[in-house]
Image (cartoon, rainbow, N blue to C red; front, side, top):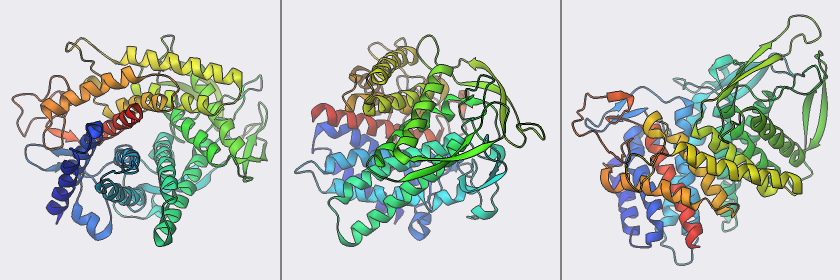
Length: 505
């Protein structure tokens, strides 16, 4: 049955290749997804109980999965892959005269992402006891832990301290709100049971996104400097004192989207506010949800921009902080920052990409002329600088290589590509040259080195000629291929396809 389903999906995709050359990148995204998803996971498990539990690596010589289980950071990429495919499929299937097979593929992916987001994500959920700058030893339920548990038992799965990190929650929030938006568009054409199911799923995606957002914002540092200003910033996790670009920037866009969702709603939110310097006094305030979410989107961007931006207009990684939870005194029982450290200047495409997406969304919705001008200047500088910094034209004539060839972080590159596509398809700034350069390199690898759903890490050089099944050379992982990387390649093709659709209207 598993083989039949894979052949059926591949057959559907192959039958669509003649529909339009403009959809080639989408077809390639689906080729990779449908050729590999069942190589990393078990179709029988999914068919019988709807669980998707991919293994970390796949040996392309022996056909064996390697490793026991994903951690959440890796697992999120399967949701990202399915979500980006849905975004592109939705646009194609709704074109007048589109082949109905696109609708079937969309429906199949929608079910897969629902199962991946609900049933199997439960394996990562647990409770966390957290002391923040406004609350002491609060128990949060259904927080996403780093590691997968053996059975679903969130009530007894402790993910406190360093067992959970805020950026894992943030990337799920991003995906869930994107899926919410996709389903909201679908609802217009549905009725009866299909509409009821759509409504139920939208509610789940939105409710859980808001809950995880509340958890992340609880990590915002409200303790004060002697001059009364907030230290600001979200630590990597409740068990860490360092503050990272990756634990702040990925939340900016979701906060803007939540503000938009509630823009015409009277719904309010209650939140806690820490008192002035040297006090543990905390009061409760209330604000319209639309205003509250926008307030934090702007605060987080300002913190990131003021803290992590390098002089070459790309973003560094993190700062160390000196933080304490006093047993006595005026700050008793609450996390209190004493000082922020120096910037770790290491630049990753992940950090610049997530910040670029965030400032683009802030520009898109802002109606303040001064803010809008600054956001535009910031995003143009970052879009240009990120291409200049992260690309290399030395490996092969007329092609750019991207940093994953050195770092193995295809998902980092996908984050930067995504930002370029969002800016381009929202007609904010013409980043088509950067997208086309990325597409050219990725398609070169597909045209020359594609192997049963897999691409080599080095897109311009290809697979190592003398690889054997026992190899795992140079930490580049081209024999035991990472699912994290493979799913990211599929997502990259989907993002490029969205740019194609915009370009060709």
